[in-house]
Image (cartoon, rainbow, N blue to C red; front, side, top):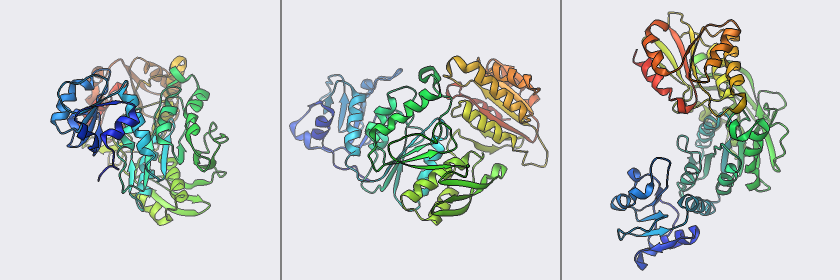
Length: 459
């Protein structure tokens, strides 16, 4: 797989940089782009990015020794190897990605929203991948560095691209959308996330809707029609809706939770009527499947290919991954959390009973949800109330804000335990958990609750 031809001379032109090196090297072409010196391969362009902990300029010489044909740098380099001097390497990376994206006349699908972006991305790529060569965002590389690197991974053989776009502040979506320029925009939901910067749901919607400043007149917006903030959104494009409500263009009927085996439903649309079983935990998976089916039909994917694509789906790390030990069934949903995704996870847990011969308890180990602003205490408390109302047998709340989860659970008559740190939990795991229990683990990414999952697996 090779990149479309990009010479060092063209890169300098696109980024507004100054080339340093032998004149003949200007005609050299790059075969890849990376910001990680550990991943440099022969022919790569290495971008020196200044991070909060590591400065990529410290690895410029190492990158050249590893085979990088050139470096993008904000500093003058003295090792004698080619480099392009720019004012801002991050901006240069974005400019390069924007130019490179313009070289491809393929459908690009942008996935945005507060909850379910990665699931929708994976399902959409699985559906399209049945008939097309598809590039998709790797893991969760959906930010100002991940998005340009994704676009720069486009190759001649790609027939479609599915790009996840994540933001936390106003203006950030403009930066991403200017590079991606999506032909189809999937909006999964508008929820309580990054409220410290975005303020409220209207702010979340406004920030994410910046994407439509960079769509063409023939673009399509695929919107969650069950979301009150999206159902009447004026996108300036053609709109296709999906959801459980009967007014949606694509809807799920006869939705049934099959526990850890997944979900089943009929997916109905103007040009689609299929029965599908999706092997993933949680009824909320239906929304990602509907979005994927809608995108598939917009791009002419056959119903049978959609059916097979949905059946191919497997959850990615930390997103409702189910594993089993001799003692427990563990639902690892530790990648991230906000009130919407936390509520969905608790609801899914409430529908589960132990798959083993011994009937166990449903236990939720829940931690802080970050960046919720002035409503943080209230939003945490509501999760605890919901857990109690749904009959969760035990809520273990951990973290500075999680005490409000425990309080909310107790307020509604539920059983809860509050601990300040993860370390306080570990001595009690054997006492709290019994054979056959089903344990959900969820918190914001910075809480590092994957460590709890590892401890549970080791019991």
